[in-house]
Length: 424
Image (cartoon, rainbow, N blue to C red):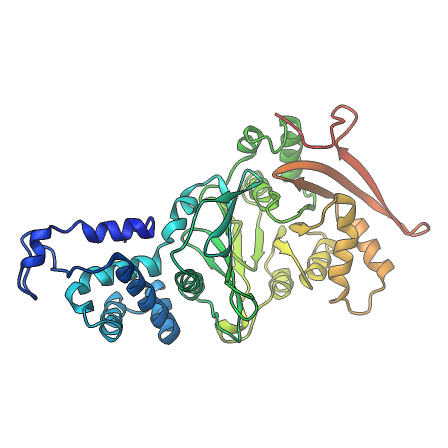
């Protein structure tokens, strides 16, 4: 199915029919073999597509989701488009097939965002209104010269991204996060009343092919000496945490790290949303089950806890955000290698960040006991900033007398004193 490149592009396509075709009797095939269309104001056509999409998403969102997941035949939605169009406009029947095509393109493509979805160097696409969009490329955010034709079309576009990927979005559930598995996208949308004026859109992209450590050297995320260290740690049984703020490069480096691990090391990868997509064999890829998906919900904590019976070598949690930190800490303390990403601005903050997350799920363990566990089973913290490694710290233990962790900075060191980022 072709994707609408822009709304002007869509209208131009409709104009490409021969003018002679317009004189043919209604209901007959045209000279060019195309269905006859009536002359219509471009703005009217544009508004008609938007109106039809909005009405279908409001009244028959399950049909859109069913077609997207191939559980409902495509023809069912085509018939629904035709019926809705006839209710909206008496002229819709004159160019039904073309209208069906344009609505399908709007519903299942990425419209004006498609060029940025296809660009593998872009990691984030964000929108806060019909005419305010930014992208993040190589860790740098920049504005986009992009505008939806109306607030209604932008609202419909944001909602359909959620609905066709199996999510629920409405006034009561005004925020939803879904994954587009085919394009490897994590999509967050908020709508009114949570968003005051317009929906907000946040798309995190993940590469179809993992960047290897050599690729990251070329992109100046790290130097060759640091990459060699990571290869050694990947081949060992070290527990490694990757920290930084959003879009710092944590998941990218974790993906590269996993590809350097022993071929037959058995790894459980537990995620809330698809982000890691391992290419290495012997990886058990598991996802949580959310409340709206029916049945018993399954959390990251459940996945990690259940993994204790799966004869695993390594646990990998895509992102530590809550009680799963306690389960991961328990797995690491039982002798398993553990990998994870976590939001923290400095490597030194990670032990206490883990403590804060694990405390809510602890069964009465004191903070001192949790600190002792962290100091004993957590090995390395790699901090990233703006898609570059900024710091590597080794956790060498915990001193109960002083209530302090014993930390050793491995990067930057005396040989590489710069504190901003390593270069190739």
